[in-house]
Image (cartoon, rainbow, N blue to C red):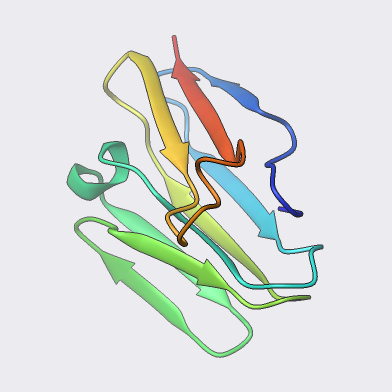
Length: 101
């Protein structure tokens, strides 16, 4: 994450194979992401202060310099949009796509 983009902008995954995404905020301001896809998937989120296992995930927010990992098992195939929902960030182009094949 940086101002105002995710790199890479497209991540391709294989359905049924476990995934570990490492998110790093390399920007100077806070960023977060939201996606409907992870709201219905069991996830594990780990950062410097927590280790959480949940039946779904609504939002991940990272302050500048922070990092977190998200682990899950993708089952639904398709293209799923993610976006930073801090005011103005999505509009500035801070979006990415998770493609599950």
